[in-house]
Image (cartoon, rainbow, N blue to C red; front, top):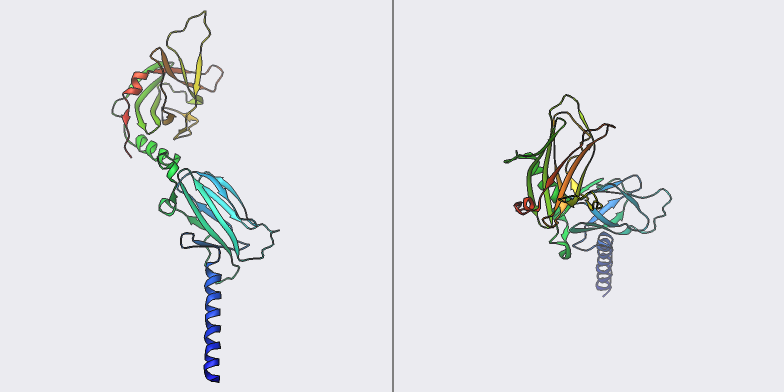
Length: 279
């Protein structure tokens, strides 16, 4: 009888130890939420496949966004850690979400990863935003457009040794992608002050006030300040409509006081001829 009782006690002790190990290993996490380990001397960097729109950082941690796709998280020196499970870290992108169970572990034998590359496949799609296009996807499409030589370069304006060209227009969902280029035929480098888009009346009357509506691009692929011979860029605008008596004007201005500025027009009929981009 004693042997049976002792055996039962040993089995219960083993089961308790096993349950404790499993509980410690899975605390605060689920099969869908992977664990990530952190210690005081370690800074975690999470690289997202799209622009990070929102983060929820557990109490006891601090973080910032050094870049639009990068989240940096660490334990501050003043933090007092009571539990191994610190909380759930939530990273929300433009279309996707990812969560991690953050576990404090200062043991040297624990495998730590200072850079976590999330990857598109590692994030869950948010259904309410599934139809939208992320800035990362827009940049990728713009880069493909820029890498291909334009088929039909249309010189829209030539002034002071500068030629303005409309290389193509594409549509992608709720966006318009404008392939615009400039050519400098002089020997003086062109220092860009800015490039603006605005909608204005086709015919201006001296007695009336000019009605101008500036359109801000969602993004531009390249950030070039100076060009010697050629400048080409892809600008993304939200899809817009305007009547026939108005024009979308594109103006490139130079930084110098007597700077060379050049303006050309894009008609709504040009936008209607835009090629549909299929992802």
